[in-house]
Image (cartoon, rainbow, N blue to C red):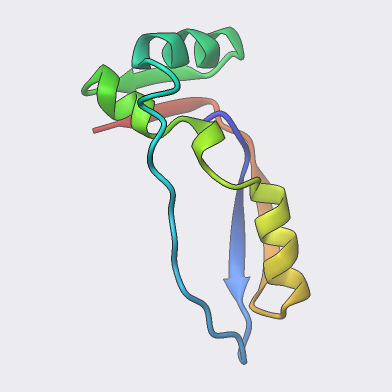
Length: 90
C-alpha cells in the first residue's frame, strides 16, 4: 500500500509460484497505518481498521528485491513501476 508496485510480463520459459505475507496487526493499528500513509500523501479507504492493518507494507518482502530476483531468474521482466496515490481495502 505504501510502496511501489511493478507490472511484470512473464517470460516464455518462466514457471513461478505465488506467496504473500499477512501478520502485521500485532505491530500496528489500522488507525496508525492510515495516518502514516496519509502523511506520505496516499489517500486511504478501508472497510475496517483491522483489514487495513493486515496489509501494512512492512509485512511484505521488499518489492524491488523480489522484482530484481524474478528478472534475474528469467521468470519475468519489468514493464512498469507504479507509485501509489490511493488505497482501497474492502
